[in-house]
Image (cartoon, rainbow, N blue to C red; front, side, top):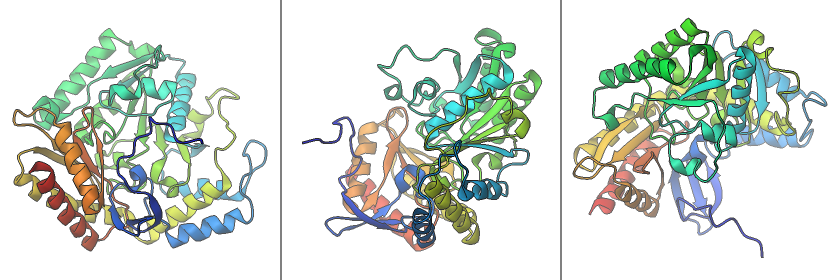
Length: 417
């Protein structure tokens, strides 16, 4: 009898039977408050009626129209609609299925467009598991271990992770930018550097936000040296951080934007966006794929965009995110094991440390499991796995935030007792 790979470990014991809004229901009938959102994917909540209806309607007309063979209306309409929310100047799109594929597409585009071989990524980044994306990932060794030799041409520079360094954000930012300059002097010449790839908030790396000074520093150096700035918005995009795009917080433009996760409410769809001039520099035949821009996934993305805009979900993420962060800070104030609470919007992390301030993954795991037992589904992240993250659907309301905070306090008390 075939079964799933034994390497696929579940973070919770739940066997989900159905989902509705911010809740999942197990086959045993128990209801769980889902603050994982499928790792930030179900942005409109589970089975939003408008998304479900759009998918049903599209599936009855055309499930798949391979977009280098035939064109279909959902893909064209989605591209038109995304122009309403994409940063100015990013008016050309290429669609694939996953975040990793989109990162690989952006990597290929930047090398083609500049004729340069190298890229700079930042320590703690997660960009995916395929060969190029895994090489660019430094959030934990588990994503790249045993996969050597990895791709060449990737250089790692520090991210301003203030808590880990034990510095102020200002000190960490000065250090990161100074080290980036040193990287360009010692490891990759600007003349050989195609792009900087950066997450506005480190995802798997521990939910660490960038800041305006750091992002402005990247933009200034990119402009000075003819380097492209690629913003990986796979997890931070589509309202997750309380702005439509995570880098909107920092008032810095990008040359290439990568989006996935919340784009289609759970259907596999991702994309890169760039200017027409830049996208045209991709070599012929370098962009394609069997499933990219699937008609049903595009219909789901159109409905998702409708819901995000009409229900004010970006604003809701900002409002409820502030409420959640305030509540998490109150819990942390009474628990010395929670060394830091951080994030943007509805993308928040709680970092667990021992009495000496070192990462405490065991404590994080105990609390995460206690939360599951209490009915609150959460995930961990960070290099040591000592950060418990909260990423509820963007439809979450104040009562559900308060419910989650109550269960969180219960779980922390149980896990730390």
